Amino acid sequence: MLAPEDRHLLTDALRPPPGFRVDAAVATTYTLDLFSLLLAPLAMAAYDHTEGDASALDAATPLTLLESVRRHAEHTVVLCQAAGMHVPPSYPRLAAFAEGIMAEVLPPPGATFHPKIWVLRFVDAAGTQHHRFVCLSRNLTGDRSWDTILVCDEDASASALLDAAPVATFVQDLLSMTTRPLSAGRRALVDDLCRTVATARLGVPAPFTRAEVLPLGTPSGGSWPLPERAESWLVISPFLTAGAVRQLPRAPGRRVLLSRADSLEQVGREACAGIETRVLQAMADAGDVDEVLDDRDDAQHVVTTVPARGLHAKILCWDDGKQAHVVTGSANCTGAAFGGNVEMSVVLSGPRHACGPDAVLGDEKRGLAHLTQAYEISSAEPSQDEMYDVERQMEQWQAALAEAGPTLVATQAGDSYDVALRLTLPHDPNGLASVTTVRPLGLVNAQPLPVDSAPSWRGAALHALCPYLAVTTSVSLDGEELLRECVILVEVEGAPTDRLRILLREMLADPAKVLAYLALLLGDLGAEDLLRRSADLPDGDKSPGSAGGPGFDDLVLLEPLLRAAARDDDALERVQRLLEDLRGDDGSPPPLDEDFMRLWQIIREATQS
Image (cartoon, rainbow, N blue to C red; front, side):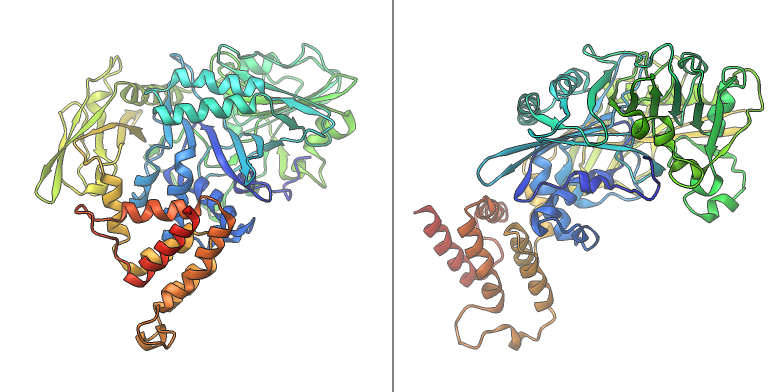
């Protein structure tokens, strides 16, 4: 069942059914990177434009990404663990238009916000809705790890259905855990999505015949799903605790535990007595050959909290003698996962021959098993991981900074801004404030300053007034430096209220870019390509030949404008909003020639009459 050659992409899970577009989307993730955050709206817009041609993702231009983010960011919400966002190597300016997508979640003390789901609603031209629930083990990052994905689409005729009401309740429970309330518009979006998905009839993929969601760590959450006894079982989990392993069912048949070597060592041989312990083979656990050959030791350890490669899937599978059951989703085989963390998994049931432990793992010739090897645990007793304890302290400290409500106060100074951090430091029992530095994420070359020194910076451009603060905490442990970096959300005071409008005008100051962007808004990539190539034509070749007549650019956009008018969708409204956004502060029209503006006015009047 877990055939390595059977690959699925998250972008495929975001693909609307034919004739539909994304209407609302809510996602949850433990860790997050900025570029993956931008990937989701790009995937949605690519399918909007191309009717399912995913190759548009690979050929995306900066204008394509800008348009996709502006189009889909307003109806997308991503909930992430506070202090779980990675520091990107650079900060793209167009990320400004996705600033409202992300919200931080802070679970109860000592727990972690760990679910990885997507709840999506699509709509067609007639207003028909279609829902989808996606449950993953994968975070919203660019990691190259082995993960799982379950997709349940709305299908009233499906022989097996998943009750989606607990999914809606789970998402509603999460909204009480955010470090800041969602905006009124986004809260209304999430509430409405939860209302409609609660009654959706979600189909369960074959060969499973039954499914039930298993939320954990919320008021509506469940608990440990495995029985005390089973015929056989298989557990796939990158992280383990001895207590959870000892709680696995007694079974006369095969018992297999597939994990990572360091996790098995931490659990110890005694807890795994009678269990077949396995790990991924070295080549399967590495991103490339260099990682296998690279055996260098570095004095600095960067805390990542999640493996960027290797095993990351979570599967609890058992055979009860009548049928088989599979738990898939975010929960590891740990005490924290089933004893406080916020998690989401799905319990699937089906025939033993197709869904049982042997079927899930495969054998030495096919499936995941042939990428694994036996592993002998060297230590009998569980080992204490002092580094993990310090890493958790660093993570919880940075999450507390996010909860403390940091604010960047911007003051205009000529053509730039001075920026100061206003923050009341939270309780600091481990003295981490003195080893923590911060800088505004948009100020890439800014000097990181101590968080406890009332830090301020000068020379920030308008795009740098973003609601992201890069945080770095460094701790020495036994001669090794532990370094944890993250991004937390901040409020921004003093930025112009029309900041995004100003940034849009700066990015589209060239009339050629405006025309290409209009082609995107009209949903016509062919026109965009023609406009892009027309920039290379001699000026004399851009005229259709009649003196004073419309130019090449106007004719290229004429057909897309007419098609958009005939479709009667929201494309023309998007064009109108863009033209209004591009007006100057004095109300002057956008940088387009008079012929196009006359053409637009004619079509606008015709569609409104």
